[in-house]
Image 1: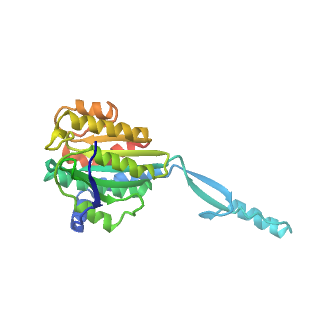
Image 2: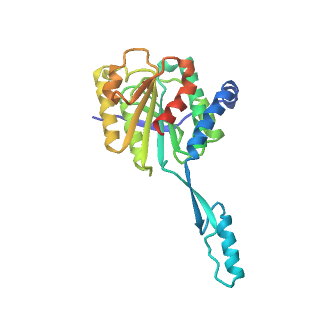
Image 3: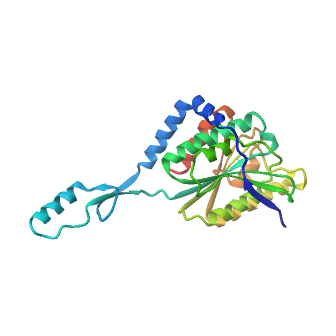
Length: 272
């Protein structure tokens, strides 16, 4: 009934990987950014405000006319943009198990870079964590980007430095992220896991126990107002995913090469 989890900053990687990814997916990345920009533009324009982003020309003209007529002018001469109904915080939990070594790991990094670029456009709050584990005595959670951390070169280096590690022990990191998100003030909270297989470890966690522990952690997240969703590239049967997440709360990507484009698209559909 216990597990030891260590949370630490992810290691840095080369910025050259970032440039290579943007060169490779530049056209599609720009298209995704435009999609996200359209979502962000769902805003409400508040007129006649005491303070704001720009001058409300109609209100300013009226205030000037009142002043010339010897009347007290209104101070409400600004317009302010208020974001519409979007109040979303999302944590992305990335599988760093040993089975992701090679092409899967590289594709995960590319997907996170493109996703992060798009998330900057939509201005939703988001965090990125990677996870791995080796028995309940050594569960690892790697902080790639915290909710309050700006997206910049520091985060890009950490994304570029993501590498495959040990096993897929999912329950402890899900519980930790649920605890972190409890301190985030947002109307909608999402926990999106990107994984290539079922919960696994070389102890008893590699069977039904791992699946049931993960399912219980996801139920606990839901009780705390966090909505879990899974993006999987597991080629095997997916009955365990339906059992853990529910039939409508996971999606299977059958072409790994499409992962960098699919992840932002899935997020857009989840939040609009």
